[in-house]
Amino acid sequence: MFHISLLSYQYSWPDVIGNIGVAFLIGTYAALTAGKIDADGWVYPLFNLIAAFLLTISLCFNPNLSSLVIEFFWSVISIIGLYRYIKKVKK
Image (cartoon, rainbow, N blue to C red):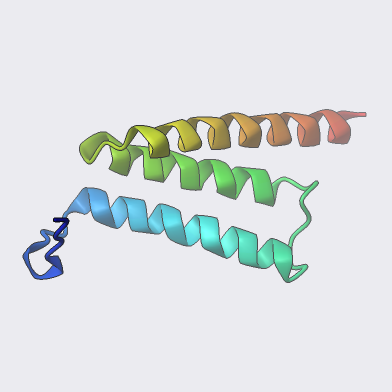
């Protein structure tokens, strides 16, 4: 049987950091979907990179391999997006 008790959950500073990362991730995606930011600009990949970094910090204290793999690739893709933006601006 699987049992989760939210009443006994200890909310700690890694959780706060992870939730800030989640806010960056959701806020950035919402801004992109609403047309407030451009996927080819610098804001979208930078905020995604910040989100991945904050979530990775949280995951270092409460490891989950699948989530760490996602955050690794999220970071790599974000860095590629920032690189492409910088390369485009320098032309």
